[in-house]
Image (cartoon, rainbow, N blue to C red; front, side):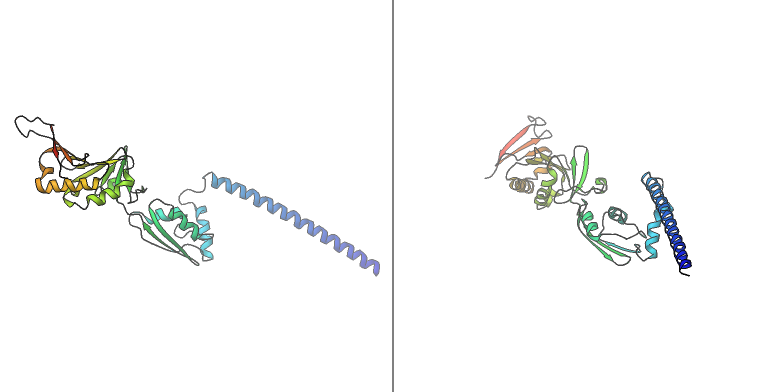
Length: 284
């Protein structure tokens, strides 16, 4: 009996060893197949063969996430004025109905606040399938012409991508190097004199030091490098008392303190030629 039991034990151990060997072989083959499949799928994705619009493969993460309640089923976005929700969602890599697995709200907030048209951003992930995004866009303040390019800028002078300057023709136009960062101070100062502000068509930054104003009637007003605020006040006073900006002149030169130089644009007298300049001592 003992010998028979020993034979049975040896046979049982042999069968167990064979079973373990078979399982190891099957596992190895399955792993190899999975690895090969993963390599093939990665190559297809990286090659762009499966990421075309409407591809069923691109919908799999969202479908899998929806099964476990992790899809972006409810997205709330507030604060957008000049941009579309799709632009914002694309920046953080989310699409309606897509997967929220692994979504990092802090990282998404940092991404949004690095966009040049976003001033502040707040992102909340409400489990399992809600996303709340609040943004405050930078406020368009002026159009900056640099060479042949036009940029919409905010008060700080930062250019904002995604905004077409041609769609914001009512904004003031400033030109020249450095005009973007100096525009807010100039525009705010000129705005204190509505009669002049209403006539200003553009302002050019000259040599990164001073401004020249271009009025809609063709007159240029050349401001000094220093004390230009007082020069604007002088131009406004001359316009109020002498209506100087409606007298058919070409330019009003205020670059020298206490002096006003006027370039005549038309014949003012029989002995005065067009383009003559007259200098008048200012009032100190």
